[in-house]
Image (cartoon, rainbow over all chains, first blue to last red; front, side, top):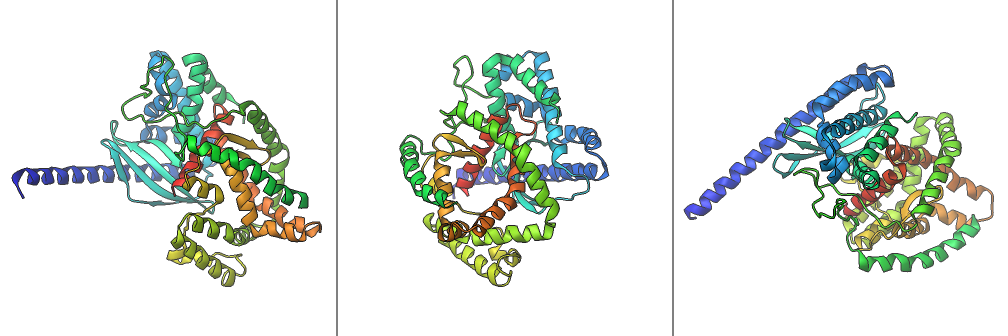
Length: 193
Length: 260
């Protein structure tokens, strides 16, 4: 074995251990996030209270800015600063509502972690199985590092939350630009249930 | 019910050319095209780690599909949801699980044949083991003792649409079916295949005409209602455009199943 391949090998090992350290960090952060969410779900007695209590927890563990940007897609670059803020605020409310609708206070889901992968630097995908109300779901969490490992997407049975909104919001943007995206988000936030 | 059974082969024959016709044009299981920004630039990312695209499927029937989607929405809320709630109210949870398990167990030929057609003989063998264990130990499939045997637990399900996908047949155009909801040309043919392979439909075909034969598929519909409605809710709640949301969720879900 010559020196160059030795160095290469060494580099590979360092990279690999760096990657596994990253996945371990991301996994740890995700476990904490899930624990926090479940703790909130358990001490909330009503759906409205749950949504209020969830907000600070989700704002800590989810990257709403990245989620909104990607849900909107390429059109994001043409949003003004104020429009970006509006869209982020509305989309955040929508996501928090989606979460709180899914959780019934008191019901404990069982989550099993599967080996995580790092498809790109600064990004880790953590696949899990979720047993909730008698059914099994495959749920993959996408985690990213910039703001200290935060969830940027949730993929349930192959359906990505962000990709789903991307299709809808991109269609709105093509129809009427930033204003159409914001007013469509506004509409669905204010839609009576 | 009997007439329906006779219609199926006809439906299959009429739709097959459509699905195979699309296969040459589109080989990928998930027909995803890159979203292009309005100014014609091919770069369509919001940032460096953004690799999302609009999830696309050919939808030449969109106006009709949207109308069917609205109709289904009305039927779900006005009719099926109360029925589903009634079912959940009248039948205790334990019995509902038993009924669900029994119907899933009877569907064994659907999974066996499709695993075999996909060349997945190991899974076909596991399914056979699972069927035997649950039929004998699980009292005709009411219980699922197989879930406690590690080798037989969590076997991914198999269906005819998935087999077509594995054979490289594309989704074909998107179709919203009355009552059943989102589907594609390929999966409609797949549904016909599942129907033909499902012993529950054999009962209707063989003994069709007797009133009691309606009870078996009717109960099958009942037991799958709560789940189907929950899926519909999950796909459309908090959406910006419920139709697009359901369509996108369907395409992604089926693509994930094809990759299993």
